[in-house]
Image (cartoon, rainbow over all chains, first blue to last red; front, top):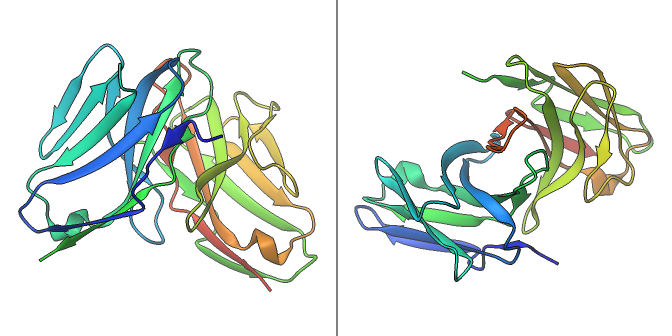
Length: 113
Length: 113
């Protein structure tokens, strides 16, 4: 049973527009959420995170929004650039601290020039 | 900067061979993880370790074993490689604590013929 779901396997966006990647989770005990970006033949790189005590975290062109009541988070990329084309993984962490992250299956973003 | 290195970027082995995948991190992280990534399946946790000589099974441990003799090194072992173990293998490490940001190595693309 998937606890972290990324329901869109792929997304195409025009360069300069906003990319919105979505993630839903089922476990209300998750208290920390992360987004990773992965290029082919490379390991995932950490992008941005958010604690459950916040509803928004911004870092340059990347913003993560958290809606705890809906158990939903989203990653906004504005403006989208061709170099943003990659697979994006959403991940969640339990309050217990030393448990592995739970990952979604990823969304492949293609930014078209 | 955290650095996680993996012994090989690409590896080709034959069915039945014993395969060792090595991972080393240089940031004194307590936690280390092994994942495999397959198209449409996302990142699946094989094994993890919270301390030297400790190991815990992840979601798909069958056919794999691990070794952690030193804090900085975590090895994944395929006792008898099979074709269904052809995959991208990713190692990660993290500090103990509530912010479980994991840092990934570049990955090893293993092909079993």
